[in-house]
Length: 200
Image 1 (cartoon, rainbow, N blue to C red):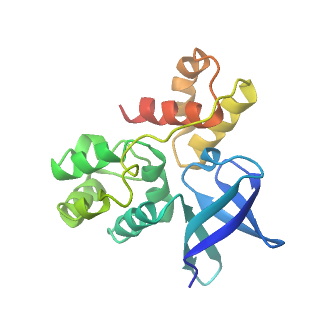
Image 2 (image 1 turned 90 degrees about the vertical axis):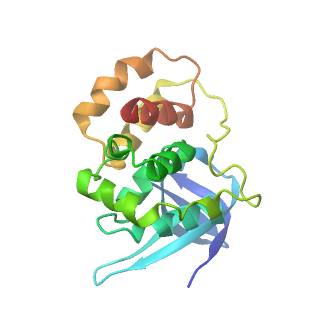
């Protein structure tokens, strides 16, 4: 099936981007749509999920992130939406450490992950993520570099993205005042800080 798409970002929404590939627009669900910019030329690694009612594309910044997604959805109780919510947090190193050290409290902070699923994550993935932190993708387990921005509309987009990832409205509202105190942030920065606050 599809390995990647190479084209231009035609639209950015809270839970997906549209990639224009030679005049065909592909709707691609992604963990953090706001790491991309309008009209940016991109190569998006993709995974296609086929069900009786839909065909859905999930997109990733690089091959290693796609591999991490595939490992996550192979865990019982983790579906694509939960896997995207986990990947949205830029602290992938923290995820690896939590799995290695059986840190259930860290893992249950992700939406859709209860104690049973967190335990299954540890059971299924402990010792199986080290190969992703290789020299081919040294930035996979580091927070992403982000562009600058300033508007409240960007904060609104970040809040919508947090809810699209599955975080409860009440939890998002609770951290909103802290996010409003940040000045000169773009949507990606607001989203990253929101994820940090929700999982700390």
